[in-house]
Amino acid sequence: MLTEYHIEIMFESLGDSISPRALGIMTHANIHQDRFAGQFGHDEFHFDNNAFAKTYAYIEEQCRLVVESLHKKDALSAWEAFGRMTHTVQDFYAHSNYVALWLNRYDGKTPPPPGEIDPVHPDLIHSPDLRSGKTYPPLEYLYFVERLRPYVLPLIPRDSHAWMNLDTPAQGFKFDYAMQAAIKRTRIEYERTMKGLPKELLSLFVGS
Ligand SMILES: [Zn+2]
Image (cartoon, rainbow, N blue to C red; front, side, top):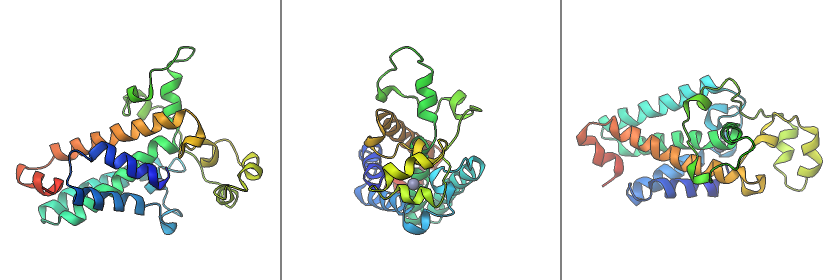
């Protein structure tokens, strides 16, 4: 997803629950994953290239860092790790066919509105049909130059990030489903994190 949408997701999902300082640091760490150096060789940051095992390991590592840092009273490192983790789970809905699989279940019928998407449907999360977009350098890089996109896109395979992504509203109606799923998932991850924390560390995490 583009930076502006990651920011929107963070504020929409956590704005009511976390101090502005904590949320600012989490959001900064989230969008920093899309820095130039974070775009290459880091499938696990963005759920790219079907690197699911590597990506789930990365998510777990960040979750562990959150808890470890809080135990050391290092809230800053905890917020950064949580921010990095949220980037990855948010990209899941923009870079995989999860939304398409969810919509397919309403084949022939009008699907429920985007706000009703279940972001963690177990059958879909573990579906053998779940895929994430592959990157095909160097053509894939040219795709990001908007002027060249119409010429480059037909040359890139259909299972690519270029064809599959729901990074912006320009990708069509599925983008709204990806946004809502990412907002709900971020909230789920927040609640899961809070649940696992001892009482004395809860206020440290929310920055109050
Ligand atoms: Zn990303």
